[in-house]
Length: 376
Image (cartoon, rainbow, N blue to C red; front, side):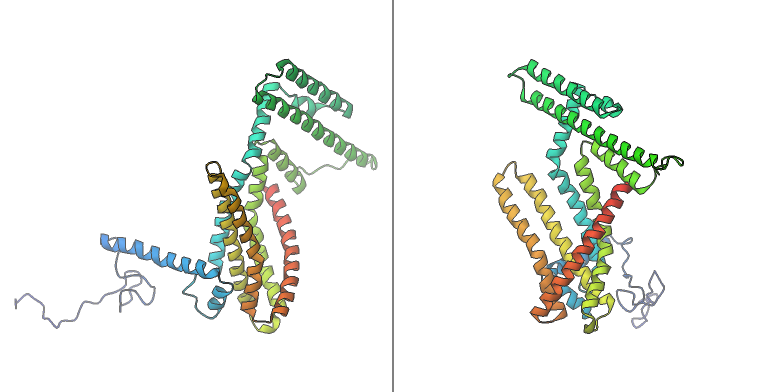
């Protein structure tokens, strides 16, 4: 043995965690959990860390999503203490909600594409045939509105007659679109004049104080301005739908605690804490989001395949219908398996909770939808 070689029985150097300085007893720190291997020193460790993290995370996600399709299984096992196997309920709910909203907005864009094309045709028709929108906006009386409308329609009718029967279909479609714009502008101006008359009548009732000033920054004024702005856009209908869908996460974050409170009220004798009911509510809503995600994804897929494979539309529609029909059945079965009551009592509570929840959903969704439209 060389004189410079250390003795074979010399103790190994102390290994410590680079993050917290704790003495290591294995490949991971028992205090902070950091791995002993540094991905900044060895390329192999860097590649290993990428794949290990990927498969560990995705394995847990796939397991959670797979078992989520069995009503009540994930909730029961999570509440029984098997938490490391599954994605936490709040995290799963947030991920699926945001992903569902994103795909839903894409599907809405495809669904409203024909309406957007029609709106684009109307916009082109306004430019091509010079519909007098400014004249309608400035018309002071109902008679002036009607007279302007009649003149515009007569002019467009003369344009159609001058083109004759050989006019291209696109041109005839633009004239028809211009006529629709004329009627819509006339109706809009008539409604505004009627509102002005009502405001004036209210002001005359208290002439000493004058008409009340309208708060242009109030909720109603903002909502009216935004709706008018939406109506002026080519993709107005799609924009409104996307805004309402974008308010869905806020609606759900309000509803889940309320749903858990309903479960606590109807199952108060089961001894579960409120937070346990929250877990059940989160996993049930996560399944609803997962189902809607698949429904919207199928809608996108059907829209993309329909031009080349038109026969796909019908089976895709059937599959979407089955998925939507499965949602209330899943919730009933989950309620039965989680709370373990008889079918008749479970069905009775399910119907009552469902009716109350539906009313809460309509109320909260209406409020958040108006808030989203007024806040844009």
